[in-house]
Length: 143
Image (cartoon, rainbow, N blue to C red; front, side, top):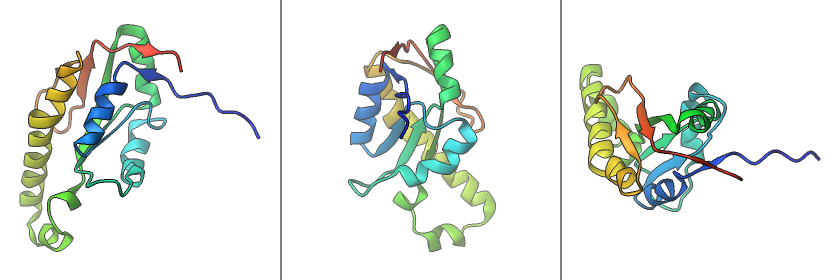
């Protein structure tokens, strides 16, 4: 059996723990890239609470923290916390897109960003769901 190197931990750890307390699954250096992270984040949920959304940076993004103290995070909502599958499927595609944007934007602006800012993180986002959120003022800690 080989030992794996510990994933880097950042000064975001306390903020990410606080996000977990409000039902936002937040992960550091989760997994190798954003595409894999988006595909795997749902399976990272446990039964300890209703998970309403997620936020993560991947291992590629972790290198940026070491370089300049910034990282981009991916984000989204777990729709099953907001609507049933039947309710969602009954909406036309344009209404689904609009509702998802409303859910995610409200979650980020009203809950996620205030937690991050209370932990000394500067948040920059243009309110476009196609754009990742920039977090500044972050440092890597030794694992």
